[in-house]
Image 1 (cartoon, rainbow, N blue to C red):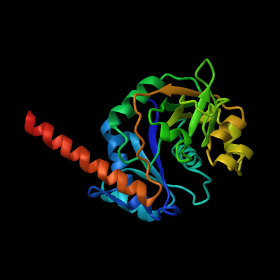
Image 2 (image 1 turned 45 degrees about the horizontal axis):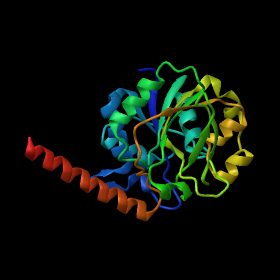
Image 3 (image 1 turned 180 degrees about the vertical axis):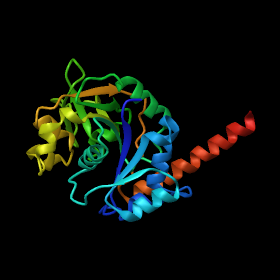
Length: 253
């Protein structure tokens, strides 16, 4: 495996305070996310990057590697890049810390697709199957060119249509690979760029600074990121459903 998986986590989340430490079926959210990554690539290839000694202590308790970063990072991407620079890494994977149900098999598949990539950034994407997601600002939609290179990402419905009835859509799957050496212009910026500030999507800073982003299609269509108390309820319910299904399958064997 080329590079490490770095999972960004901060203590100061606003919509759901201290969400990185919220319990998901007996484990803090950040630990459960890390365990999925560890299942995919092994414990020595997974690090949590955080601005919080409390989160770092939590990781230590569960024997998850962590690295302390600045409290001034603008975004999770900035935190991952700072951690990569501290560790002297040129290629890293960014797995979002608020996706505790992200399957290890999808992580493995993304690494298989990108391990030999020469792009500055590779990102997981998939088709939108739930029409409600097309108009959800929580779901970053994407459009790409005929080389599957990202053209734009938005919280609004894209692509649009003249009659506003299009049901075609694609979305981000929140796993990425970065070639740090090819992100020099991104790293220089200490403020969010124009469109990034509007959409609150750091991938736009990459596009606005001329970075090429390759879209890698994955067979993963669900969305269980946690930003609100409602999201937390949905994830806990889904986790209970998964446990029930696994228990039933074990009895059937």
